[in-house]
Length: 276
Ligand code: HEC
Ligand code: HEC
Figure 1 (cartoon, rainbow, N blue to C red):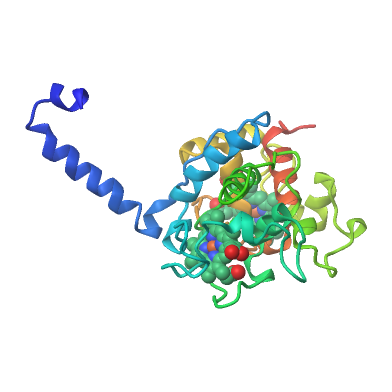
Figure 2 (figure 1 turned 45 degrees about the vertical axis):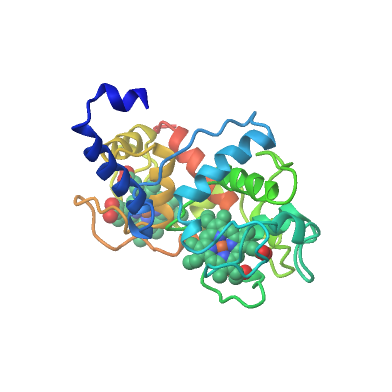
């Protein structure tokens, strides 16, 4: 309260109005995430620390436009999605026909929401890697830790978070041999090199991959470079660079790449300085 009184009473209405707009903006899904706030998540964080970050992410990335978190209300709740209170308890052993651990189930619920449809709800939840939530892998770990805390005790860490393919336990998932995990092999396999050169200054169709230039492009958007690169790959229409042809880059890499591939590629592209 002291902070308020030192501004004098004239400022109070402005603060209230500002507070209202902050609150209001948080209720409109379209304005909530542009660009999403990046939270610092250290690899050394304990599950309990991750859960604290995860709670903030759930609030900031639109989850509560569909989900409620109301203890004692059962799964149905008041929202378009399940009431998440008690989710750790009811999914302690996963779900029949799906992942049989809580962490496996929660990870699947975030990456491929349609893989197991909670009874009584429709398939409207967007995959969390994509807009509007656009979680990265560390953020998924934080959200999973928070969800574990809703009726249980957080235990997930960044290192133990299952890859999406393990999590979805889909028998039809591509076998490890057919999924390239080496970044150079991925750039080949996904035809990136048909349009992007690895040589500084060489423009094929899109810009060459040079980490310093990616950082400059990210800076120009006020984005962290890894987020910029990930967005450029999964949602290439989000930002149009006028020097390059519009609507040329395929916009289905979000479906074709696994999250692990996306993170591996991103790390490679953002750290490789070019010219070998
Ligand atoms: C557009 C609405 C919508 C948004 C946004 C949304 N969800 Fe969902 N979610 C649903 C619906 C509907 C279901 C149930 C159907 C299904 O299983 O896909 C669900 C299911 C879930 C489940 C499984 C719950 C259970 O009891 O088994 C979890 C966990 C979950 N969502 C977490 C999240 C998180 C975390 C976010 C934010 C990153 C989020 N959801 C964003 C609608 C949404
Ligand atoms: C058919 C051509 C084409 C293919 C294939 C393609 N891209 Fe692109 N890419 C482009 C174009 C054109 C742009 C610039 C588009 C714009 O800004 O609107 C671009 C932009 C990018 C950017 C932003 C670069 C910057 O400096 O701003 C990244 C990162 C990127 N692509 C990564 C990839 C990756 C990774 C792949 C393969 C998985 C890929 N692209 C495949 C044409 C392509």
